[in-house]
Length: 319
Image (tube, rainbow, N blue to C red; front, side, top):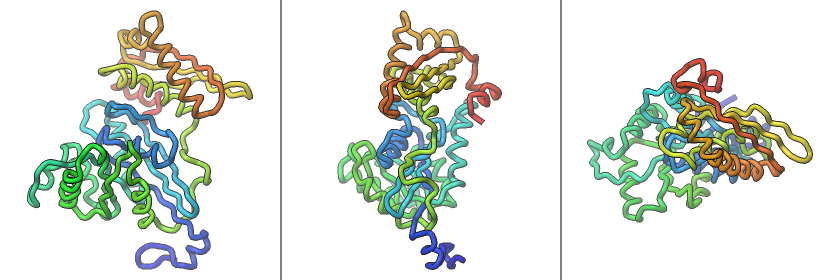
């Protein structure tokens, strides 16, 4: 039985042990710090991060649990305008998340343009304008997270908050620095106020729902983003073909799919040096995550125009 606000009555809350739980979507344009924020909140690297935009391709859960509260954060790819088939699918993941959450965090960077009440829309990047329109019916279930406050002055912080306040009646505007872990405790306290009584969905120790196999492939892709430039990282998919664990070590074999032979040559590098460096960097991250010795084998394969081919995308998991 629920009260007129949709929350369980006190008798029901007692049955679930007074637990609060909910799904919170992280929404924003590329490179605003969604994945960094997720990793900092859950205290572990569950989503890869680089200085390049559009690094995240999948919806990834990060689970924060403390005493009687569990918050399940959903990291989403950056919402951007695109004609590329792969990127359209990626953006669709993020857009669909809005319908699956109890609350949303709209992560934005400082909004320093001058505006007036009649033209508050102008303070936003065009892709953020698209997101605001998507959130038009969800403002009362959305907190705005003003990220990267460590790079602006107090005066600019106040100006940004004033500009964001003109955009609509959001639940709250919370300024943070995900990179520096500034004000994240306040963000958690704010979220707790809007959670409903509900049993936990996950065990207390769980910090994500993705598999170790998936994280291994993501760490390989992260190394490619960090070490290669231009379009190469965006033309890469990583598939784990072997993941065998025993008491002594974990054997992992991955295929790196690219679109052209020239890309294959760049990833392998002179005398295989680049591929060796990618493997070495990824192996260290996987070992740190899994706490066991890792043997990592990488192979590069050309899958022509896979980012534009529906069948290839499906075979690589982009449905």
